[in-house]
Every structure is written in C-alpha cells, then in structure tokens.
Length: 421
Image (tube, rainbow, N blue to C red):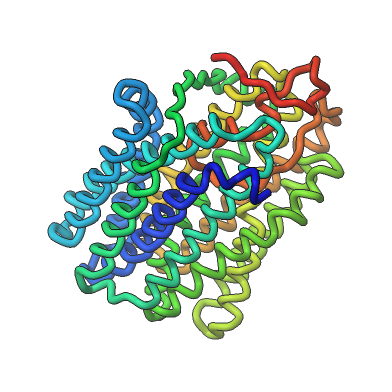
C-alpha cells in the first residue's frame, strides 16, 4: 500500500491539512455563533448556506479547473478559503456569515475536486481501492485532528480562524510544488434523479434522508453540545468520538452489507441509529460519559449509511452508468445536507437542544421504514455485485476512484478501465 500512495504523497498531505482546517472551522463557528448569541434557527440557515455553496461549487469547479489547470485552481481556491475564514472573525453578523459560508462551500468543493480528480488520474488501475482507502483515512483523520486543535483553542478569539487560514495555505504548498503531471478533468454526467429512484428506491431515499441527518450533525452538532452545557474541550471530545466511531465501524458494517441484501443492512443500521438518537434525546447532559459513548455508537452507525446506499445503487446499475449514477446519488445527498441544518435549527429554536437528536431519530427512523418496506415488497438479485467502500460525501471525482465505476462486463469486474464521458 505504501508503494501505491507514495507518488501521491503531496496530494494526500494537502488533503490532510485541508481537512484538519475544515474540521477546526466547523466546530469553531458553532461555538462562536453561540458566543455571538445566534439562535439555532438562524445558525441552521447559516450552516445550510455552506452546503448550498458546496452544491453550486460542484458545477462551477470543473470548468475553472479545465480552464486554468489543477495547480492554479488549487491556489485560487486556497486563497478564497483563507480570505473567507478570516472574514468570519471580522464580520460575525448572520448575513455576512451566510454569504461567507456559501463562498467557503464553493471554494472547498473546488479544492476537493482538484485533489480527487488528480488522485483519480494518478492512481494505477489495480491499486484504486488502496488509494481510495488511504484517502478516506486521511479525510477522517484530518477531521478528527481538527477537533483536537479546537479543544485547545479559544473560539472567542481570532486565533482559531487564523489557524484555519494557515492550515489551508499550508495545504497549497505540497500541491502547488508537486511535479506530478496535471491531468485532464473529464466530464462527470449525472443520471436523471427519477431514473436513480426507479433503479434503487432505497438507495435514493437513503442518500436524501442520511444527508438531512448528517447535514444537521455537521451544522449543529457542536451547537447542541454547547446548549446542553459542554465546554470547548468537551465539545471537541464529543465530535472527535463521533468521527472515530464512524471510522472504526465502517469495515464490520460494510462486511455485513456485502454478505446479504443491503436493504436489510440499511434498515438495521438506520433503526439502531434512530434508537441511539432517541437515547441521546432522553439522556441530555446528565452523564457525560454516557453522552460520549452514545455519540461514538451513533457515529459508528450513521457514517456507514451513505456508503451502503452507493453500494446498493452500484449493485443494480450497468457498468456504463455507474459513475453517472453515483454522481446523481451524491447530488441527492447534498440536497439533504443543505436542508438538514435549516430544518434542525428551526426545530431546536422551538423545542430546545433535544430537538436535534430527535431530528436524527425521525430521519433514520423513516429510512429504516423505507428500506425495510422495500425489502419486504420486492426481493432483488444483484445485477452487478459491488463491494462496500468506506467513504464520505465529497465530490464526484472521489467516486471515480472506486473500482466499480471503471469495471466493464468484459473484464469480469476485476480490471479497472476508464469510463469515457
């Protein structure tokens, strides 16, 4: 594995620094928003703006990268992120933050697209799974390290914003200094959403509903923690444990989904996640260790739902449609992520902090019903058996690293071949 990723060390180093800064920024904004007396409904809208920008950026980034190249695009987007991050501390008003969060979303998806499309072009066909696994480990590790830095910071000061800007600028150094050949960025088509739903209703529903819940967590999880009385270090611990749980449970739950009907695994995981969320709503802040343990288990469950959805969709798509189908599923998940913070924030404003885990419980409870209903309604053989891959929702370029979107009928799904746009 080391030999497979050594030529891409510069890109992975840039990704690690970038994700560390992103993880630090999300928690800093949540706690700083409380210091600035943002109500949950307003802050939910502010955080939704980030995901709206993220979706917009998926359309804008490819054209810019094709026009000016990967290295200059990375420098461009890094400068934009650094500027918007610093402006958060200068202008902490809700309207300004909403605009800045949207710009940050546009810029970060541009940076992810540069890294992931470059990794995709550089990864040898036989080693895509290894490269993808390392990249996902870097993603989760960077997000977790960001929480460690947050626990050591003072969100009321300018320092954490400056540190995020420094990390983003440092991320540009190994990428812009790389001697790797810049690739051509291919067009990433999308299947029509109705086609995705007809092909795999459980996958489409799972992508949307898990997006709602995960958007609520990333946007308001730290707000929830501060509202129930946790200090900065405790907020960092809570988010850190959620991410670690998500990283550790990917492999065993993935093996479970590979061995049987994925809708059964989706229903079981979603039902358990809903039950844990209900326990969180009931537990409140009475026992900190219980709270940490529940969030660890919750993260271990919910971080696997979107990968199960992707694998279920790949099971039923012909090879030539796999990449475009995954791209459309990503869009559905992004729409859910954009709506989640706004809906959860409004619920928290009316019902209090406990409304956030209640929101999680409803979203995953609905998904459990949908997945179980589809499983009981119709038995399906896998037309194109795929494998579960641990993943986070980033950009369509990351999906190109999966072996499945490159497989064809003639290669028995063992050899990877480039899917032509």
